[in-house]
Length: 421
Image (cartoon, rainbow, N blue to C red; front, side, top):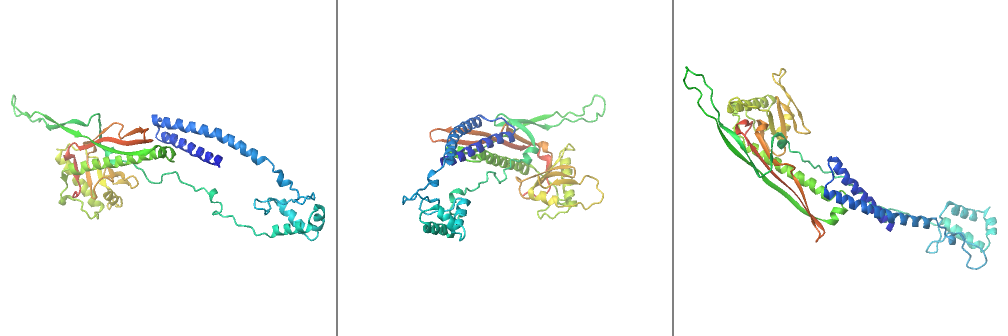
C-alpha cells in the first residue's frame, strides 16, 4: 500500500513539474524566482520518492519470488504420510489457482482414469474424490467493480476546458501612451495660423498666431487579490496559483477594454443625420444603407476637421458586427472595396476601413473614426503579478494590479453611425 501511494505521489510531482515548465515554454519566457523555487522543491521531492520506491520495489519482488513450501507440501493431519495437493484458502476451503489444479481434479473424478490415480495417491480415496468433485461443482463468485472498488481509480481531466481570453481589440487598436506615473500630459493645437493672399505690397495678410493647449490623461488603478493555502498551491494539478493569475488577467483585460470602449462612446460628439443614412436600432439595414451610413460618417469627420481626417477604423459592438457580417452586396459594380469580415475574430475590413468588433461596447454601437486619436495609457508590463508569502499561516497572498486610462484626443475625429444608447 505504501509503494502504491508513493508511486502516485511521484506521478503527481512529475506532472506538476512538467506543467510548470510547459507554461513557461508556451509563454516563451524564463522561470520567475517563485517558479524556480517550486521547481527545486518538485525535483527534491521526486528524488526522495525515487529512493524509497526503489527499496520497496526490491522488497516486493523478493517476496513475490519466494515459494511458499507449505502450498507444495501439506502432510496429512492423520500422519499416514499422504499429501493433500489442493491449495488451501484462509477460510479452509480450496480453489483452483492454476489449470494444472483444475486438470488434476478432472482426472480424479474421471470414471476411467480416476481409480488408478487415486490408488497412487493413497490416504482416504473416497474423501479425496469427493473433495475434487466439490471443487469442480462449486459455483464461481462474481467479481465486479463494487467488490474491487479500491482498485478502480477515477480519471480526472487536468485540462481547463473553459476559454480564458485576454483579448482587448479596441485597446490594441488605439495609440499606446506608456505611463511611468499616474498621468500623462499631452499637447493639443488650439488655433492654427493662417496663410492668406497679400492684397498689395507691404500689406498684412495671415496674422493669426498659433496656440497650443494641454490635456491630461489620468490612469485609474485596477486590483484583484486572494489568499491561497500552501497545500492548495502544492497539491493542485494544474496549478491553482497559475489558474488564478490567468483568470485575473482575463478580468483585467475585460475591465480595461470596457474603459476604452466607454471613452469612445461618450467622447464622440458627432452623429450622422437621419437624412444621410443614420442606422436604426432594429438591425434590419441593408448593405446599401450600411454603406450610406459609413459614407455619411466619413463626410461628417471630413467637415468637422476641415479636411484633415485620417479615418481608418469602423468600431462595432458584437450585435452590429454580426448584423453587418450577414449582409451581402446588392451592387454589381463597386466603386470602392466591399470588404471581408472574419466572424471568428470579429475583425476584417469594410468599405476600405479596418473593422474592430468588441464585447466592451453597448448593444447598438457603431462608430467610424481615426484609431490614432484614441489614446491608451498603461504602465509597461501591466498587469503586474504580486505574491506575498505568509509563513505564520502557511499560505500566499496573491494579487494582480495595473494602471490604465483611455481618452479621445479629438472628438471631431469620431462619428456615431446610429443613435447612441
